[in-house]
Image 1 (cartoon, rainbow, N blue to C red):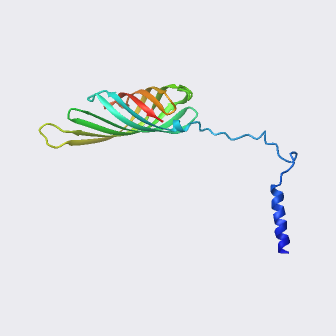
Image 2 (cartoon, helix red, strand yellow):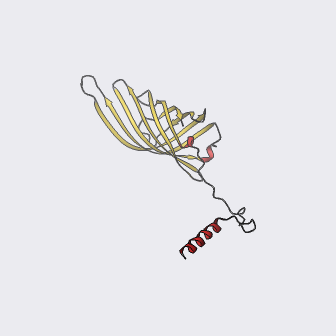
Length: 191
């Protein structure tokens, strides 16, 4: 009796996987397919930026290292997260800064297929700035740190030289602008 039940179960399982004739199969040509809205390639999601800039204010130039990550794309804007470390010095004063930005970019200002893309984006940023000053007559270096949040609009362009290498040229303003740390920057981007 047990052998008969096992044999019937095995035949039932084989029947479930047996090919059926074409007339018995459902027509799937009219069923809509789900399409992904994520359009970024791996090169477009992450990139590193190594650059330098001309600063408005006490310092003449600044060096920077940044990491940029694509966050999301909506109907009108794309959002990116950017972290940046900058450093500069002049005479006895040295300054280093860490910044975290959330930048919004209108989708209508560029197309992904363009090799040279206009850059127009803005967003809030959190900054930590540390200054070190070694003044004459003092044998120690004095440090001062400040944390602040600002909104930065960027205007410029990015040129994609290859799939993994490009150039970014941009200018930055700050709102409110009581700190003279605004700069024009050129950076090599590695994707």
